[in-house]
Image (cartoon, rainbow, N blue to C red):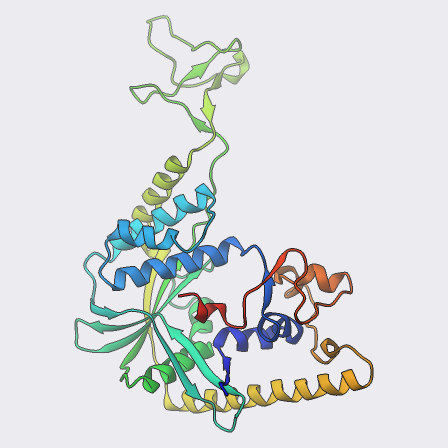
Length: 349
């Protein structure tokens, strides 16, 4: 009998809300529409995997696009700009060779139900001869300052320990861990972009919609609102948006792209192994409580605590169900949801 996968995503979900973890991992039911952040992150990881296999920027972009059936054209533009900029920033790379994504599994001490599973983004061979576990991240948090709280949280993230242990289970000796982080753009498409003529001069219109021409026969370059003049504009196109993002990433590479090494001690690994065991026990204990609830005529979901709060519910795909006082039943897929299985993060190759 195969064991259940206790992934880092599942552990994080359990720590966030037990009810959410029940729906997502025990029932395998998730929202039909993935968030833009999830879609973008998945695509970025696929591009990095393609790069590790030797793809150029164009082929990495094509690999990223293959991760979703439908794409918003401005998300595509953002993705294209990001991949182009990444390949430019790391053209002279300290990574000599990269072994792409690899899946691992190892036993959790004392558990006959769960095993540790995960997927490493890549194992890199650096120019100085060291072997590094590489983890790609996308974030909206500031990353340029090494003392930023984002980096402190990454150092404490138990994903780090899980992946080092996972690499060891594959027989890989890891000398260091490199977090390869991309700061997602906060720049949105513009509602209005100035129209320019073939000479790059902004087109200024009068109150009747005619182009304003000066007495010397040359076109005006600035609009006088007091005279009813205005600039001719159009909504920014995906191509224009992509170019604007590219320019900003080229001007501020450190704002968008950072790589930092993080050390992992044996003490951290031992503490994490204990946390794995404790969480596996907690999950089995709550399942026993759920069976007891069912014997008493209560729904089994009642045993799984809801973490109701302004920092959890607004970001949860099950908010509409819980706020309406409803329950998701195992084997029943409500409108707006789909059955994905317990570990789509591992099953989607």
